[in-house]
Image (tube, rainbow, N blue to C red; front, side, top):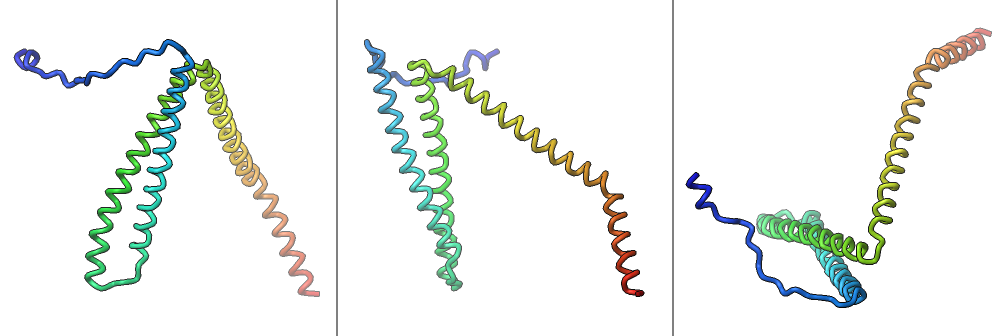
Length: 168
């Protein structure tokens, strides 16, 4: 019981300035600008991740095998991996931020539910396609197993005819 009273509240939030918009179009324009900024940050972070990965590939494929180069590879490799993981986390965070901004924009413009229904229909279509492909594969396997005796009979007839031709 004592710990319950002395427990600190870990949900601490900072004060933020409340922006009030009198016009819906102002808010929509602000969200579009924020989405464009996030897109620019995404492209920068992606290009930096690609650069880090290319440097890592160059270092991994270098042919120098002396001990100084090996030490450099180890030092660079850890830094490259740290940089790449940081960029991946940043890209993931930016995608999540862009998604929340896009959802807010869709709700303001009235496109949210139409997009949700379209995504649901795409998911259902993908599921039906996968089930159909699995069904078709299973039917092919079952047909092959069913026709194995016929294939064996045809092969046996071919070898009998081939042996009769050799005797003549």
